[in-house]
Image 1 (cartoon, rainbow, N blue to C red):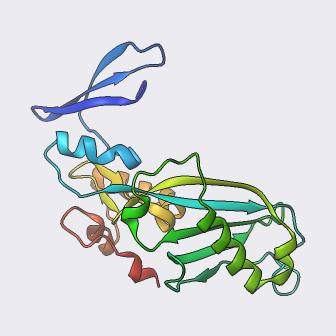
Image 2 (image 1 turned 135 degrees about the horizontal axis):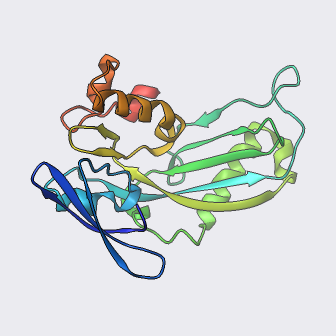
Length: 217
């Protein structure tokens, strides 16, 4: 699209989307298909099309350390580590080492989504900095002296994935969804064009259970 969507509606068998470009001009686009891959703002456009998914944006915070030597077994990059305790307001603290630079990148998931729903992404909380420092330093004590190179935040769209060509949905990907996004996109196109897809693909539809996160634990 040329810019952020303002509205979308059905027009017979197709769709009409109104978008605004960089100089604030409005453009009307007509298409046979509409794919809602609009992340935290996706629910607004679902409702305009009469689709109710209950999606909402939750702020998830992240960090990256300075460069480090590889810390894994046999001088390999450190693999994924995850702490799934419900501890100090978080239910998952996790991260891994980047092979290219040796930096460790990690995240923390809030225990109560409502406290982080639609929060300002420009500010990282003291609670996040403390929990990330505590957990990673308990795993690898040397990290207590390394320090962060950067911290930031982004929205995960909760509570589940919707990958559904019938309803034009490609949203709610969250962590594991982003890692799988290229494969999911291929399945989406295959389903849209009548090619075979795995049996579990139907679980990601509006009528399915969305392969809930507990399925990955």
